Amino acid sequence: MKKKPWGGRFKEKTHQSVEAFTESVSFDGRLAKYDIQGSIAHARMLGKAGIISPTEAREIVAGLREIAGEIEAGKVTLDPALEDVHMNIEALLIEKVGEVGGKLHTGRSRNDQVALDIRLYLREQIDALCLLIRSLQSALLELAEDNLRTILPGYTHTQRAQPILLAHHLLAYFEMLDRDWGRLGDCRQRGNVLPLGAGALAGTSFPIDSDYVAQLLGFAQVAENSLDAVSDRDFSLEFLGAASILMMHLSRLCEEIILWSTAEFGFLDLPDAFATGSSMMPQKKNPDVAELVRGKSGRVFGSLFSLLATMKGLPLSYNRDLQEDKEPLFDAVDTAKACLQILSLMLPQMKVHRERMRQAAEQGFLNATDLADYLAGKGLAFRSAHEMVGRIVRYCLQKGKEKIEDLSLEEFKAFSPLFGPEVFQFISLEACVNRRRSSGGTSGERVEAALKAARRRLNRPGPGEAPRPPGGASRK
Image 1 (tube, rainbow, N blue to C red):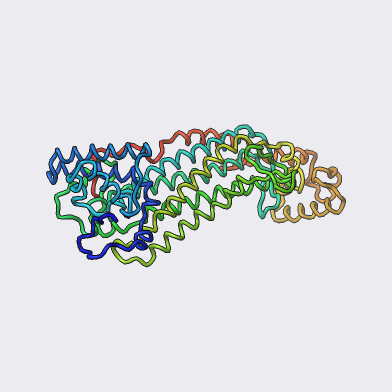
Image 2: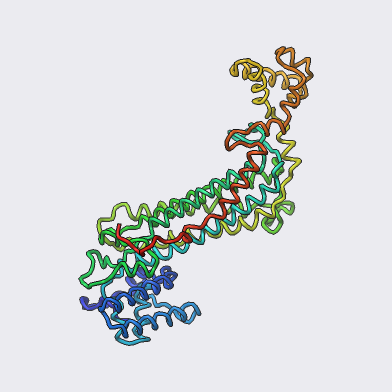
C-alpha cells in the first residue's frame, strides 16, 4: 500500500475499504490536463517569487509537461490508492524529477487546487458548449431560410390558434438558444476567478504572487476571501442552472419534432439515419433521438438538484462532501454537449411537409381573429366584433362549412352590413400572416429582417474570445 502524502500524523494504514470508498481518481482523472496547467503556473510563480529556485521551477515545469504528454498518449494509469488526480500527478512528478517535485505543493492545498481545476475545466467546457449552441442556431436559421414562405398553424393550449410562418416558429428557438449562450457567457465571467492562494482555508505564509498566476492562466481576478475560495461552488451551480434551462429548451424543441413527425400531424419526416425501428412492429419509425434528448433533460435537472443538496448544509470552509460536486457536473456537461451535437446533425436532414402544414393552417378557423380585426377596422368595437365572429364560426360548424371563407358574401352580410367583397382577400392566409408587422411579429417582412439580424448575431465573439482588459488580473 502506497505511503500517503498526509500520512505523517497516522499510526495505522488506511483500510482498503476506506480507500475504495474515498477515492475520486476514477472520475476526477479527467481533470489531469487542468491540474497540470494550474501546477505549471504555480511552479513558475514559485520560481519568480524566489520561493524555490529558478532551476527547480524549470525542472518541475519540464516534468509536468512530460507527464501531460504521457497522459495524453494513454501511457499513464492513475492509481486509486493515491486518492485523487492531484496526488497521482504529484507522485508521477516526484518519480520523474526526484525530491524537487515535492516542492511543487509549497504554498497551496488540495482545497484551492481542486477549486482551480474545476474552474479551468468548466471555463473550457462553456466555450465548447457556446460553439455547439451556435452550430444548432445555424442549423435552425438554415431551416428557417428554406421555409420563409411556409405557413402553418401557431398553437396555444395545443390548439390551432393563428397562422404563422414556419421560419418565425423556428426563430423562437433561436432566441431561446441565444439566451442560453448569453447565460453561459455570464456564468463563465463570474467563474473566471482564481482561487489558488487560498491554501487549505486561510491563505499561506509564503510570499506568493496570485496576480501573476491569474495572468498566466487567463483569470480576470483573484478571489477576495480564502474561506469562500475553497468552499465556493456557485460557479458550478450557476452552470448547472444554465445547462438545465438549455436542456429544457432542447426538450421543448424535441417535443415538437416528436409531435410533428406523427401521422396525426404529418408536418415532418425524420431521416432514416436519425430514427429507429421496433423489434416487433415492422412498420414503425420511431423518433428516438428526439425522445432521448427530451429524457436526458431530466438527467441534467437532477445534476443541479444533486449539487444543491450537497451544498445546502455545509459549514465553512472545505468539507469532503465537495468531492460529490464533480460527477453531476461532468455528466451535465457531457449530456448537454451530446444533445447539441446530435440535434445539429439531425435538423438539416428533416423533411418539411409544407403542403400539409398549409392544409392544417386552412382548417380550424385560424383567420377568425383577422375577421374580428376587419370589423374593428370598420368602426365596430372589438369586443362586439369578437362576439359576432364567434357566432359566425358557430354558424359554419352548424352548416358543415370547414372555412370561414366558404361563406358567401350574402351570408356575411346577414351578420353585418359592414362586410364587403374585400373581406375574402382580407382573411386569406397570406394576408393574415403579413399583416402581423408589429415588432417581433410573423409577417414575411418582419421575419426576413429577423433572419438577417440573427445571422449578424451569430458572428458575435464567444465568451472565451472577448479581449481581456489591459493590465492583466485585478483584485476587485
